[in-house]
Length: 408
Image 1: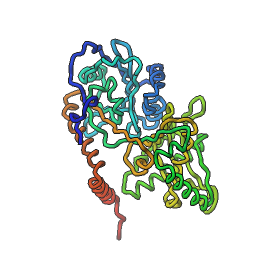
Image 2: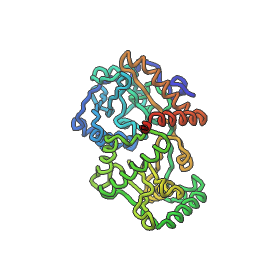
Image 3: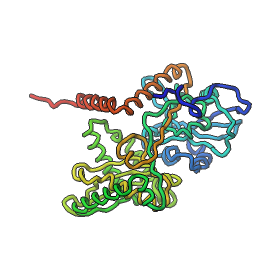
Image 4: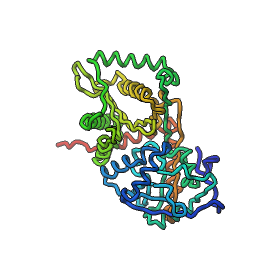
């Protein structure tokens, strides 16, 4: 297992040094998006910037959850080159600043002006910490999580200590020829599996492929997802991470926020039974975000009560991926988390990094502990035996925490 110090170049944090190309770094902080709207809009158009730091994502998150936003603008000799949309959460008395909504994101980049950076320019960890502290960021430590090696190698992150994130992410390259897409992942077997699922669904009465083309349709699909996920997580003995009203409001906002062309921030898809005993029932749902030909699956669910044996989730993925290929998209990203269905679809796997920056003495004491917790999580998730043991213990804890019925 790699430690922060074990990561080989260019991932290892460079030693603190004075560079002839080092510049005067300063930061300003506001909670008013209007104050940085022009720069934000300019930076988020860069294809290298992820949707998870877009104005749509952050605005939906803050309005839904009520979290206070800290928009950090970094400046080079007085000229702005980055915006970091952060929130601060207190955990065990420790104030941790993170990207806004990162608990539900799949990759983070911040908002960086990639066109103006000189490859020799350098920002040390102490420079960045000083700039954030002087600007008044009231946090003990900043955790920039779920970044690709490419992003972690850019300013202002390049000099920060880092560890591997506990989970990788998975991607499927797309081409105009859908047969070429399937050829990457045993196309013959994938097509056969799709046809089997389709026959089974047809035997149940047929189906419709629904999309959230109106707000009403989008919310119907989203609420079906919440219901299906609640049932699924309860059956697995897991807490429902979508149960919080603020989180649900966040996704409602994303699904109903539309651009000038009417495209929503969150694109909902679902398979509905069109006939038979369960006509009108939605048996699978998925939510997608799309930025610059990069499609990311944010979540998915199935109705196991009436469609447990038809592979409804796989069937929906097949249709969405075929549709994305036809639309000219370049990547279908299955997001963070190592699961068998992602491995079966994706020939590409991306290891992600968590960079961290202590801002004061409390943060410096906590930094090794935070890094250690991340390493332990990764160790558990990459060890089948430890993962099974952790799942068993978690299930017992959830079971024991449930109230027992009163008896006379």
